[in-house]
Length: 260
Image 1 (cartoon, helix red, strand yellow):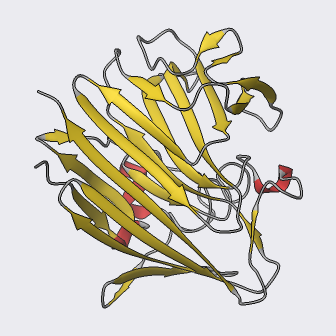
Image 2 (tube, helix red, strand yellow; image 1 turned 180 degrees about the vertical axis):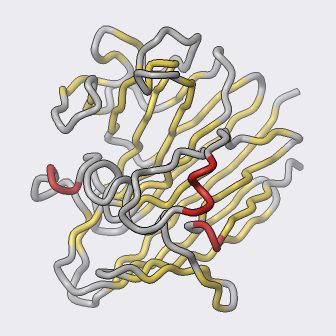
């Protein structure tokens, strides 16, 4: 049985620094000296791993408010206090699977986005599996404007193919609660459940097309609450909303497998 292992860094935004199974590290990393000293409202410091992005992904604050704050531990829970909300999570692993239970508390009516911003270390032959025909919002220019297309064909490209590098960089949000990543005999499955809230999977497909100066390769496969990247651009059904109870709960499930 492949054993899944997760390591987090509570002092630096609750960032996941390792997601490993069957001798494989799934998370991509990049040398980013700014990451260790970030403060709230700083521009995003892209060091890789998995960042907890909430209450927005793009927009203000850049990649949300939680990634740039220290988290604390209380028993089996890690949590962060932000000006408008408190986010807690409990991570449990069992063999090849991990279950992460989240709870966000805020004033009733508070709207937010959340993404498990997982940047994955993938070969040029990797493929992303999502149900054919799923509604896809494509962001070809990195901005707030999107185009709608059926998965996996959008903008004249196959978004399920994650290489080789071709100098492009696009973002997409797909109407699905789960995704499979297949790469060299290894499979990673990610799924999100949130009763009464919109869920989706975001894709950041950067094949050395970003940034303009010194571009690098990075692939993000990101279970989400919400259906857009920027909370400011969210329509009535595009963001999660805190109900009268004052809290939203959701679950992220991660499973790894390997076929020799």
